[in-house]
Amino acid sequence: VIVLSGHLEYEHQSALEQLALDTPSYQNQAARRLAQAGHVTLTLGLRGFGVLGARSGNAHQLVAFNAIAAGSFLKAVHQRDIEDALTWLSLQPGIDPARIAVTGVSYGGELAMQAAALDPRFAAVVYQGYMPTGPKRPEQGDRLAPKPHYCHVVPGQRKVFTDEDLALMLAPRPALAVVGALDHSVRDALEGPGRVDRLSAGHRLLGAGDQIAFERGEGGHLYYVGPALDFLAQALSG
Image (cartoon, rainbow, N blue to C red; front, side):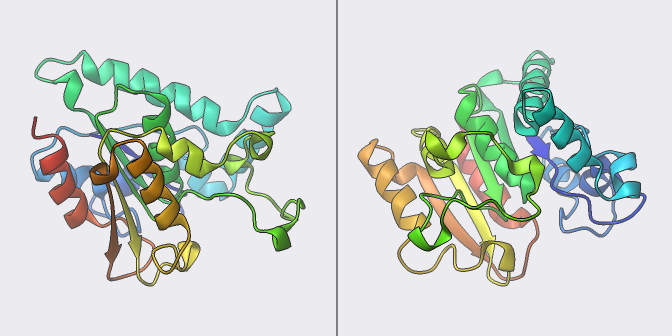
């Protein structure tokens, strides 16, 4: 399982430390705990999320801005790094390349969904603390946020496709989305008509209605290890 980090939470901790060490973080030591449960896990130091990012608090924003200025964007840079990591992992002794999943929370969940959608070598995906967005509501207009998070920006995307369109590219592979009941960053994502209904309907149209699942954690914005373990045990059983 490749485990991707979200934004850094504590000073002087890198993303690798928050995922792999016994240290408090909303990322919940996901890589270490999945490994303790029997999975081979690999996590990588995403550009802008290392120790420098923890100390400055905004290194990823600088890396993202520079990527856009150079004619690319941060998620494209991270995608290439994730694909390289997947290639390396698939070549290691004892690894079945047909049974590799990807997971993460928050920005890591967003990246996990994107990585699996764009690379069919991933057998399954668990994205947490994130839900793909669909078409803009009329009242939102076309204005950009006054201080956009450049790490999320894909220049020109809204003219061509939405994150929900990207998520449908996961089909027919199994996917699990987990959102905390108190997670205000994706508030109401699992309630009422909206994203869940559209994603479920899209998977049904693609003949993969039974391959997408949604779960609610009892807390806030964090990685829920239990649902991920239950899902991966079934999704990677073949």
